Length: 247
Image (cartoon, rainbow, N blue to C red; front, side):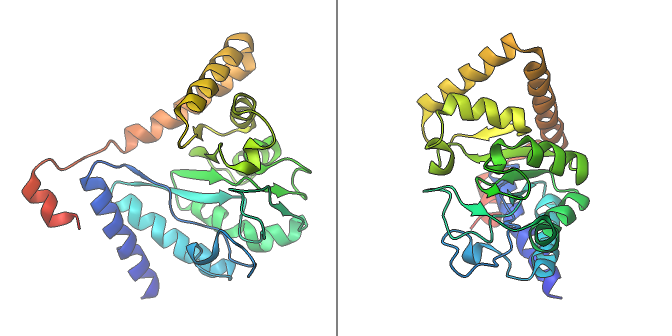
């Protein structure tokens, strides 16, 4: 069947990644491509029908995880219906809660139920969930909706904190503390090593002065260690064996 092919394709990707020592892939995209003017999701999505995205997404994550590679569904709670690219601006989704439950959220609920290891947050504002606050920095979205309501217990990654949607609003020190406090467990700061150091320093400083924040950091690191232990990297070191699998 079609879904079996998706699962096998994902397993093939996973087998190659695992062979070269990766144990995490930032896939699948679980966004529903419901806006033709979306400049950033497009054909990264499995389609415009939430059921289609849900079924394909679950098949893809199962294929990856069968190959000893952790899957990470993105971009929670849905970056599909935006006409702004969060690399350059801050997209706003004005839909009511009912529409989010019908379109945006089902793929994430299904992936969580299917045992996905990780999710990544979106730098989008969902007016119905938390007015004016990007999902990455929103406790209502990361903690209340994803953890308490959907029941996700895996690792939550932020999208890249250097993207303009966030970086234009506040310095990296501030956004990093906000993102961890909101419920993210790991932060992507993808290219600026100086920014990585400043963010780390800000997190340490806050943890030292605020016991509740320190507890949140311990919770975050515990989640990360749990999945790492479930799925240690298993690189293949023999060049001959590698050549048979990769490429």
